[in-house]
Image (cartoon, rainbow, N blue to C red):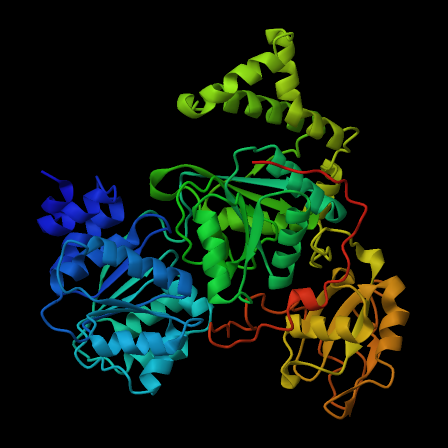
Length: 615
């Protein structure tokens, strides 16, 4: 008997999921489905991403709801539009052999009129992101008074993104007697608090220890100098010819820069971040799912809900600020019981953060050396050999060309042919990695910084070309009260001064003022660019800041202004690095996209060796 039938799932649903490849329930499904099928318990399920949580709550919902009625009976809230679409499609696939099942996806970035029409036609299951759901509720376009079940999926991430108030408002429109099911990859205190607030003696299920990562993931880190970061990243990619991965960055700008440089250098890559329209996101994700992309460069928020099978590597180009975010990132690989690798590229000062993540996950990370140029060439050569050995020959189509091919190679020996064929791709790597330098940071340097109490963050731009001696910290009398976030301010600075965004370092956006760093050689250009400048009728002031300046690292303070903030020595590290805003206030409907990377990126460096990659 099919094990899903033994769990209590009826035949038409089991037949549908069998066609999808479901053979054996995952641990979270095996233990949660019998509990949820009773329909009598609130529920808290703690399990890592990629363990089958959607089926764990989706299959019981299909058993418990009355599909003869066309009103909302179940509401599923999730943090991102990508995850919203994934859950909606999954449930539709589970129900494809049932009749009259209506599921609607409600999310920002798509026409609200289409979503309203679907709701009006009748729906039993609503899958939604909090921001757009609240918009529709405020329009009084949906009635949740008969909702029987509310599912909070990826609850930790919804809270991290600042959706607490939206969730409160949405749930206030649902009946008290509903059952609430909460699923989360981690269980920070905020999620525990929401469970207590909305649930009555919930059944709790924890798969593995709390806040731990997937046991099938290997965690590795490389220590490099800031200036070598991008080169080291490319070398790691080249050393893994069959890589199919996601590369995580902190900001939209960094994401876009790295993707564009990879494309220029011949890699199959593209970016995914909050400034993209839904149509652009869908196009990128289709290419990635179809494996026409090998590298997807993404921010944390944009990558939430990506459920793509067989991702081999997750690469942390920049480490996240929170352990929970690292858990979510690494969980993109090793899904459904498979294995994967999570790679972090760090500078020596970030060793302390690696140790902190190790303690949080309860797993030891492996320090790996950046491969040499010879290692990469050898790996690529045998990748070519393996592809030739395993290629499937289309006898029917190739037959008509064989006489001409044989004629071309008639005077060539087997050994000569093999050497020439392998050299077609191999030669490009030999040329590129000829005299390639060692990119590993010295061990002594790593140990020195690991013991030190230096908390200053890496000032490297996307390609690591910075150091303490290269940047001057400047004050500007514009901040968040002027509706600037970091992306907006970067665009404003670059447009005003005509300098490249690549030369701007860390940006700290405060309330009525901000700080930003530029390379020493650009200070006069920036000062001149803002001479006599005004913003909405108010003069814009630029001054060299005492504290934090690479020239005056130890003394001074923020410039004394009439607002009395000279003593405010916040070490914010550039503000909360959440996409779409700061302090966890990200909303997919906020539209705080900044001015856009392409408007102020400047010209690319032309000193990078030219090489084309084929995958």
